[in-house]
Image (tube, rainbow, N blue to C red; front, side, top):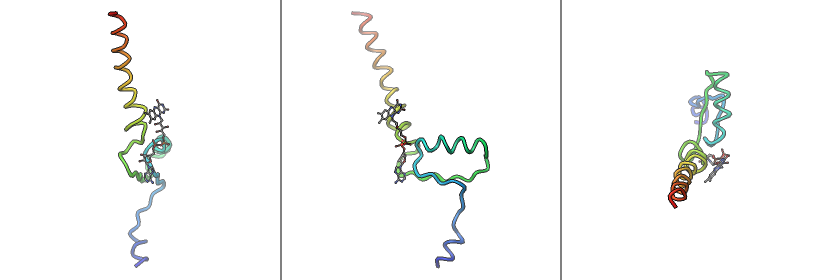
Length: 76
Ligand SMILES: Cc1cc2nc3c(=O)[nH]c(=O)nc-3n(C[C@H](O)[C@H](O)[C@H](O)COP(=O)(O)OP(=O)(O)OC[C@H]3O[C@@H](n4cnc5c(N)ncnc54)[C@H](O)[C@@H]3O)c2cc1C
């Protein structure tokens, strides 16, 4: 039984657990070797905190908020 499972196993050059900043490293490696076989395992939305809930979404909220504040000051 174990022998059959081993035969069906897929093979990868790199396996990353988490698709956050680890993808920067994988991306650089794939640029130098596009035939790399990569598996990405993530328990949540792909992209990590920065793309899904951190850096990018927070800046998308902060920029318009700052703009509104500037406009309010300009009319006062
Ligand atoms: C509101 C907010 C704003 C931020 N703004 C900035 C900013 O402006 N500039 C900046 O540099 N940083 C900012 N950060 C910090 C930045 O988001 C983190 O430093 C960065 O995301 C860390 O990257 P990471 O790959 O280490 O972890 P993560 O981005 O958390 O990625 C880890 C990934 O691994 C997955 N994972 C975890 N455990 C498992 C498991 N057991 N099995 C499978 N998958 C798993 C997770 O689902 C996740 O997708 C901000 C953070 C927040 C919360």
